[in-house]
Structures are given as structure tokens and as C-alpha cells.
Amino acid sequence: MSVPSKTQKPFLQALAGETLSPPPVWLMRQAGRYLPEYRATREEAGGFLDLCYTPKLAVEVTLQPLRRYAFDAAILFSDILVVPNAIGRQVAFKQGEGPVLDPLTSRADVEALEPGKLRERLGPVFETVRGLASAIPSTTALIGFAGAPWTVATYMLEGGSSKDFSVAKSWVYSRPDDFAALMEVLIGATTDYLIAQIDAGAEAIQIFDTWAGVLPETEFHRWVIEPIGRITRALHEQRPGVPVIGFPKGAGVLYETFIRETGVDGVGLDASVPLAWAAKTLQPLCTVQGNMDPLLLVEGGPLMEQAVKRLLDTLGHGPFIFNLGHGIVPQTPPENVSRLIDLVRAPR
Ligand code: 1CP
Image 1 (cartoon, rainbow, N blue to C red):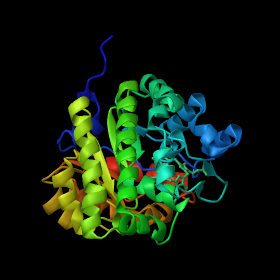
Image 2: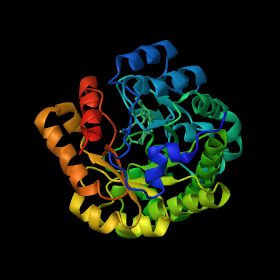
Image 3: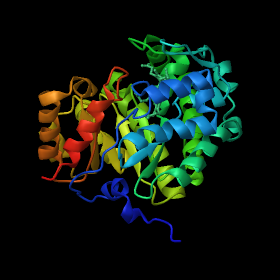
């Protein structure tokens, strides 16, 4: 039996620069709390990290949305915070709250990180990827992912979610050498982690820089563009042919420089990016992915229909992957997701 070639997978064709009609579609956080079957499996797992570290259950929740909807891609079920956990930090997810980490407070804490342990400790994640590679439909692509160093660093320094990123920014501005040391560790660990996901069967990589938009221009270059550029170049050199999508959420006009300087194959647009500008300025540079507001998916109805039409009219004439501008929110009615896919796939 022949291995399915890339040409059978619309998601990979779009990332290779092809214009497809209809465009491929998947949704960030397509597995998650809006699905009752996810809530049941999560209950069975106990904690959220137990779910991420139990391959059988992680494979199951990755496949759940694919049973309901014919998405063109599956994304490994895990979290960006397994990396800090694997290099020696405590990470906990309390039901209904965000993540909680023991914050790094000193250079000694940075020097005590254990990037050499990552591959062994994240063995269950690679086993999940291997399980998925053999379980997903032949036209569905498998996406591996990691958080970008800046976004992961914010959680490690703040000890969890943040409103103003004051602790992380105080490291950036007043302890630049300590911050640079932390970022070096994260750049190396993230590259290593993504290579291992590719070797386990991931066919494309997405790098989530959720908090990219809180940095001023100078720091955006240094701590968003440079690290993601280094990771992307390392992946392209060491595992050629595997496309990389960058998602520098909130980057605004810096999206253009981000694409030019990182060399990503695709870029995830957040919901605030103007579509005509994206079509003219960004789409000639790489494949664009996005960017419907996740709250319009909660709303459904004519407002969602108009948004889908506008996206297809504006970005559908070039390399494009339909997605949201950020992850699906828990209050999303599952039937609105079916309707969305029908609208994206309707003959035009
Ligand atoms: O069941 C639960 O209560 C946990 C909710 C949840 C889920 C479903 C968390 C906790 N993480 C995830 C899975 C997840 N996280 C995936 C895989 C599933 C999929 O996409 O289908 C991915 C790609 C992520 C990535 C992630 N985790 C990001 C980057 C993307 C984004 O949404 O911005 C970030 C910032 C995180 C941290 C995190 N993990 C969980 C939460 C609630 C958060 C956000 C905390 C915050 O807002 O600061």
C-alpha cells in the first residue's frame, strides 16, 4: 500500500502555496471544552496534564472533533506549557482557572533548567503523535505545535496568565542578560521538541506566540521575530519539506516584517487584521490562515455567514487556510461549527 502523498492533503497543498477552492479548514482549539465528549474524557483523565500525558486519551480527544466534522487538519492535543514542565518547572491546571506555575525568580533558576531531559519526559507526547499519524484519515494533515519562546517565557516568569506582563517585561528591560539566558534555553528546547514531533509523524508545525502583540517594536524584533526565525530556519534545515506556520497574535503592521524575517511558510492572522490589507501585503509573501472572530462562531446566524463570505471573497483568491483568529471558546454551540464548515465548503 502506498503512503498517502502530500498532494492528497489540501492543508499541505495550501501551505505549499496553492490556491484551493474551497480552502482547507481547521479551527484552533478544535478539541476542547465546547464538546461534551471532551469534557467526559477530561473527567476520566483526572487532571488536564494527565490528559496530555496519557497517549490513549490524548489521541482520543484529538480525534473527537474529526468524528463530528471533516476538518482538513488535526492538531496534536497537548499544551504549550508541557515544555516548562518538561524542563523542570511545576505546572498545574486548576479547573475553571488558568495555568499556575512556580515562577522563575533568579538567574540560578534559569541555570537549573533541564532542557536535556525534555525528550525523555515528553515521551508520551511523541507517542500520541505516532498514534495519531496512523489513525487520522488519509486526506487529513497532522499538525504538531509549540508555544513561541516569548509566550512560554511570560508564563514561566509571571507564574501563570497575566494582564499587563509587568514581571516578564521587567526581566526584558532590567535584567536583559538573565532574560536572554532564559530565551536561549527555550529556543533550544522548542527546536528539539518540534524536531521530535516531526520524527514521530507531525506533517506541519504551528508556533503559537499568543502574547507577541504586547511587545514594542524593538523588543518584538528581538524576542518574537529572532527566536521564531531561528526555530523556523533550524526546522527547515534539519527537516526540509515540513512547513511552519507562525502565529504572532496582535502583531498588527509588524505581521509583514514577521513573515519576511522569520521565513515561515504560513501565518496565522488574529481577528483584528484587516482583510484587504492582508490580501495585498501578506498573502503575496506566504499562505495566510485565519481569522474569523471566535465570538462570531458563538453567535452563528447571518452575522457569521457574512463574515465567512467576506473572508472567502477577500482571501480565497490566493493561498489560504480557513480558521478563526484565536481558539474556539467553551460556550460555542457545536452545531455552529457544522454550519461553519458547510459555509466554507459550499460551491462558489
Ligand atoms: O480542559 C481544560 O480545562 C483545559 C483547557 C485547555 C485546552 C483544551 C488548555 C489549558 N489547553 C488546551 C489545549 C491546547 N492548548 C491546544 C490543543 C488543542 C487544540 O487546539 O485543539 C493548543 C494548541 C493549546 C495552546 C495554548 N495553550 C496556547 C496558545 C494558543 C492560544 O490559545 O492562545 C496558550 C496561550 C496556552 C496556555 C493555556 N492552556 C490552557 C489555557 C486555558 C491556557 C490559556 C491561559 C491564558 O489565557 O493565559
